[in-house]
Amino acid sequence: MPIKQTITQQDVVTFLNRVLESDPEAMRELLKPVLVRDADLLQIDTIQFGLDKDKLPTITLLGLLNGLFGINEENKWGAFVSFSGTECPECGSLYIETESLGVGDNCPSQGCDGKLIFGGPFHFEAVDGQAVPLCNSAESRPA
Ligand SMILES: [Zn+2]
Image (cartoon, rainbow, N blue to C red; front, side, top):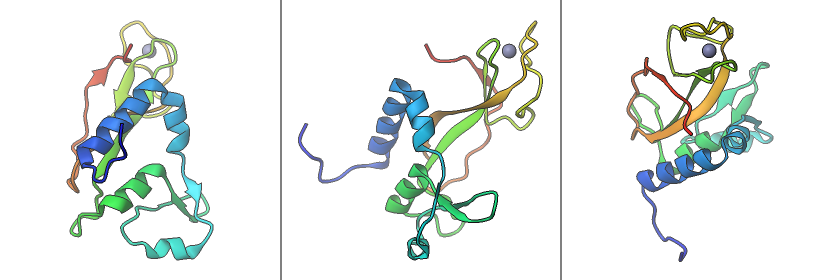
């Protein structure tokens, strides 16, 4: 494939989901926050930074990509979001972005006594700077 001169938001999302499908653990590592080493980076105001437990600024791959595409000036959302949530180590059920289920809660699957752990990312979407409603439906793990 020749080197592309332009890419769309959908190109990025399709690619991220392809990588996620191929190697979820590698993608999980790639999305871990990295401490900002030089405050000059913070001057790039389209990048979405996070804060670690000591309130120091962090950057992730997704924050970096959002910085490339820009942010919605009204609500400060970027072009892309990743969906994460909880998963049950006993039965494998995934609960994406649910408000009612958190880490350590009992798995709601019938007959399962597992405790939910952090799971994800499960999916990427281009939202073009729009806020995303939470999904409350349980989904089964992709094959
Ligand atoms: Zn379960």
